[in-house]
Length: 124
Image (tube, rainbow, N blue to C red; front, side, top):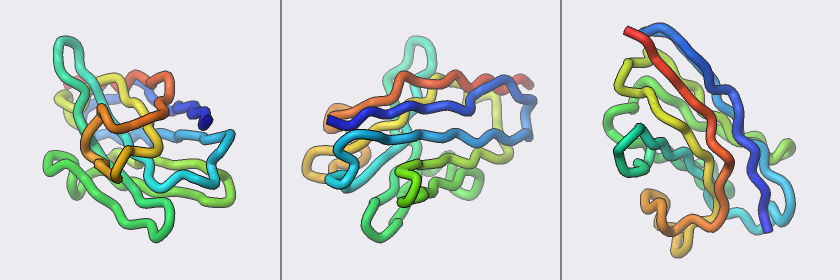
């Protein structure tokens, strides 16, 4: 089992920045990949970014490329999402996730473990 605790959300004006954190505990030695997803009211949970734990390779949805940066601290078993140039359309609950089956990193149904979610609200 892996436990995930995500944090760092808040209210920010358009153009501002936030940094989300996701602390993992438990059987973290088997983690192959972690990711951030988000879900706005009435919408499907969508992929934001992912990172491979072994070599740090990163993947992003097109709409956040150049604005968001995903990273990890292996010693702390913690993943981060630095979000810059935020837009109102980035408003959502952000969830961290770990261990996608078959490394299907963009498929939210493939993930075994989830954080509780942190609200990000961007005002115009």
